[in-house]
Length: 194
Ligand SMILES: [Zn+2]
Image 1 (spheres, rainbow, N blue to C red):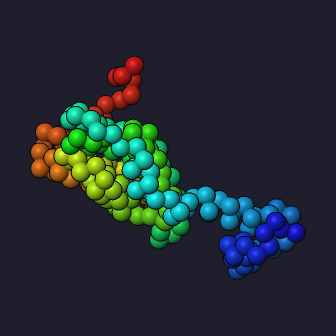
Image 2: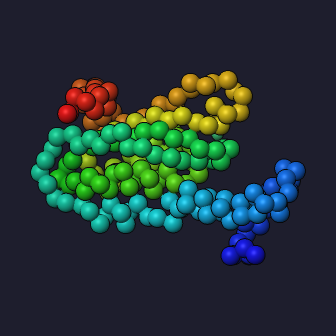
């Protein structure tokens, strides 16, 4: 009946549906375990990806030493406490110290860490830590802004709750001018570049 009858996640979802009082055999639910398993594997595929491989593949020696910023990176993750989505935007900046990484790798890095069961605080720190260890930059700043469906949907009555986390390292931590420049650049609307 199902393509992968022995898929353990499919089996679990079928049992979960039963435990919730549903009939997994009814028409609308017959293929649900397969879809859920596929979706869950996609949403957690970051476990099978190594951020070091990603970054080491695109390092360049460059003498540019001003701030590099990639902002408004959309991400979607699952909170590890409820396995419900949290999602929003990440802003990632660093000041090179002889090495830069291809710009397109930064959104990929955010994606890699967000497609795992996460807490927003750890997601923020992991992005900063890996950039710090691979690039050895003068500083790294990461700000993550997110909405958590476990807060919005579960009757916590925090419909507008929006969580902001940050990790500031090197000059982003020691130099308030660098930090303010970073925050200022994040706040600028996209239209200002048009
Ligand atoms: Zn949660």
